[in-house]
Image (cartoon, rainbow, N blue to C red; front, side, top):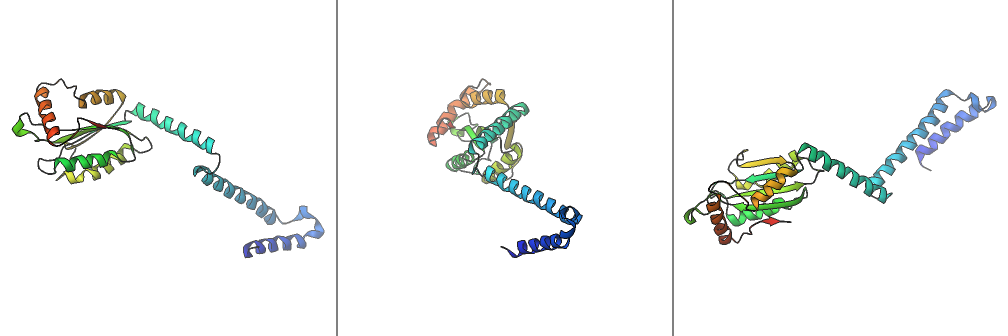
Length: 222
């Protein structure tokens, strides 16, 4: 028995012996309160231990799985209602700031982050002639976020991932847009090449030339 427990029992026994002649109902109020408080304290500690075991998946694993799925479903519905379950991110480095091959590696690293569930991205450019191919290189990254991570955290972390692409990051060259399912679907069609704006046809031809020159895929997705 530990020294602290011995002292507790000694204290209890002294009180009991002192008032044994009068009967237990006459024990001092402090002792009764102490016994009650000790029971409540031990109960709270047991609950805390059970909670920690539960959160680690050591006990009641089926119930924990149901709770986790229900929580995720709730967060997804809330994100859809707020129109922030999906993110459309456009990265526009200054010309000659970073090589195309290195830009691709950074995009790959960014889309491998644990807060990204499903992604689609393309690397494009803004040149409209072979001679201007590669000018205005940029990437469109469309993804569904893990709803357990807030958009502000994702924005901050991806900004840090892409910092090598910039001299100075602004909202113009790092365009982070939260969106809902409808906008997500339209943007997916857009980055897959269904563009109707005037002058886009010629640029898309140069995009293909640029991608072939740098061994880029038409689109990257998981």
